[in-house]
Length: 227
Image (cartoon, rainbow, N blue to C red; front, side, top):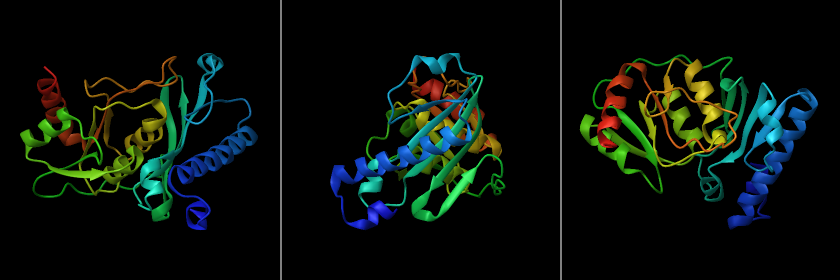
């Protein structure tokens, strides 16, 4: 936030500066606090050494660089711990809102609202399967920036479904998945299988985070949409 407000950077340079400083801060803090753990960060050269580690921190220092550059609030910082391939703990910061949501103290899941559910989709490139699912259940589409911001919108009760099929990596969803699961939401791949982390290829292309009572219907409709 200080970098964005400094006026020293603009455009791509602003995004690069935010990424660089956040990444350095997080990695230095983890190295001091958990020196024996491995780290997978979007902004660092990957190392195969992490594959033999049971505990791996998965970090996205600035998720939603475009929104950060544009002065918006829908960007996030992701820090998660995967243990034996599972998202064991995580925190998602929403700095522009002054909020951090974490798996150790998740907010209570609000009551389900009346009326049509709200489904979060990408601002720039909403994929066809989520749009078709939204049409099938009469959901209202809500465009938002980063994956972390969208997932936390469901955690906070601002929407009921976050369905993504357009491609992500482990750092995009590990921390959001940990927080959402701790809050009592359904979290899975779009075929219903669990999310697995610390794999050789960190590409993890799809994700469903939603209220548990909607999960079966959404998963069935995704399967139909992808046939």
